[in-house]
Length: 195
Image (cartoon, rainbow, N blue to C red; front, side, top):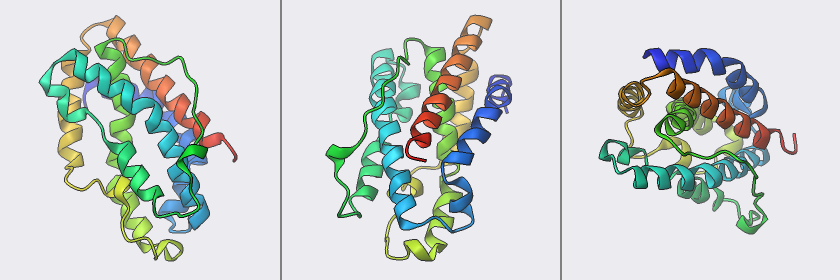
């Protein structure tokens, strides 16, 4: 692992652990998440990506470095496809989260992507557990977690290389760290709602 990503992992590990405790991680892996909890998880995931995806995509587009183009995300549409499986779910009832967090520099982007891309890595393990869960047997596809057409390992390796190239000084490292911590904080705040 790169020096920067090792640093971010070390600094944010307590936040990562705290997030796992409130985001149904144990229930998913043990194949015991209920259908209603899965719906709640998807709804909270939509809230998170509704906030981050436009901000990240806009910065990448304006930054105009084509090496970052693969990190333009469409995960919100994937989670909305999953939510469409629930006839009682109404998109207009979705919470909108407030935050002052912005992506104004490449280190900010790296910090946010560290969390978003890290979350992506677990998708293959999560989708296997979801498919084996009897409570979710009637759900045919898990769009958000299966990430069709995405090679997550190579994507992570590409991100790691770009992160090392993009954060080259102590100020950038501090900005990336603050952005990663703020991203974990927002994930946690959303997952704590109604728990």
